[in-house]
Image (cartoon, rainbow over all chains, first blue to last red; front, top):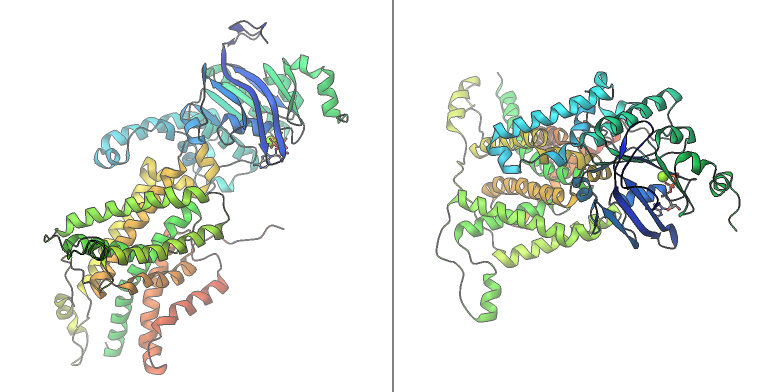
Length: 272
Length: 332
Ligand SMILES: Nc1ncnc2c1ncn2[C@@H]1O[C@H](COP(=O)(O)OP(=O)(O)OP(=O)(O)O)[C@@H](O)[C@H]1O
Ligand SMILES: [Mg+2]
């Protein structure tokens, strides 16, 4: 890892910067279960970082630590060059880290538009009283946020369902709306937990395109968990491989794919 | 028009007015249940406590006078001033917000992720604590509450409706207090709706009510929302406490209006604000009409105590999801 320069340009012309997020010796336990065992890795500015591994490897747990939902018993989280004290999820969101969930967590009773609007909450400044007393300012703010949201709706090609209650949408579209809500926060770091799980080939292609475009156009750093190796190969700059809570590989996708430890993990070779 | 029919209409209108109060209390339950999944058993006691506090502040009562006097051998009871109603209401609102902060800090925060029944038990504890605390703070004697709302039948309505009936009909008797209560409740509901639809906090509140995890991920602080919701529920309780207290005095029985809200919730559903309102109106009108048409003439009266529950039970059997709930189909 130390061999990598401060910043470099990828073959497809994107600039990858220095380390944005660094996980140092993270250990996470649930009672007797060790979900993550002494794992370290980093995420660089502007890259697409994949986390892969068999079921129960601890991938979601890792994402949950980054987003503040879980607090590790051991280890340090470094963000933008400073050690991060344990934060609550809403505080992490306030720092420009947005996420989606493996089991979609949307506001089922609200429309697509309202769902994506909630993604703007961290950008809304007006307090309770100024909203009541100073209607004009709040209205202007609402208008600006609305513009950002409309852009995202266009980008994700979901104009035709903007007013539909999310509860009525099929699975694939829900995933897309959830991505939209995360994008609405204009995050510096976007965490995606299996954004393509349960999708058909066409839906996967759309989703891949959105992820690449977000990264390319806005330079958003992305960490994503994915099971489909083809997708991982296409999207990611670097891959972390986890198995039974341990890190068993870390590097560019083609290198990771050919690593013996990774092949063993996926083929279910017994752990001594 | 036959007089009997006119009296029926009068009963219906008076029932609607009472229903407004039931709806208000039910609204307090719904707000808290929607946002935190807690059935707040203490909602009725909140109404009592807030009304007690309001009277205490207005009358310049010394809080904990009994306690102070028995410890220090003093004889203090009143500060000797009177606080104008508007100011006293503002202070009481602050007290209810303070109460919400304490509830979040010392109860909810420690019980997150506990089973619902534990939280429910905690609110039962809270209810009895608040009841005793209210007594200790303001005394347990019956108090009159008068913040200047006009009371008694509206002559204007009586005079202008007398012509509808024959010799024996003197016009509709409608209490002016009920009219004020209905207007205040309407303003409150419209205000709450605007708040939840058009403000940042309102949007956050709806988000929390819908999905906690998702709400956290978009940067909403659950603690803040809980304090906000319990404060709003406290204010709603205060409004109900003022209306009921002005009518029948501030005393223990005021906390029992919560019992009237239960059938409303059964009817309207625990998570629906329109359900609470429409449910309250139906229960209020239903019980008055039933008493008028069947209860008083055939059943010896006093059916108002149980009719609401029977109505709600019948309703539950046919529509368990409540008036506005979506049909529940168990996944198998
Ligand atoms: N909240 C929790 N409480 C208890 N155990 C948990 C919790 N979350 C995760 N675990 C355990 O931690 C381990 C890792 O789970 P995790 O969800 O991180 O795996 P994963 O790699 O995301 O798997 P999958 O591919 O199935 O999503 C599992 O053994 C799981 O049972
Ligand atoms: Mg997972």
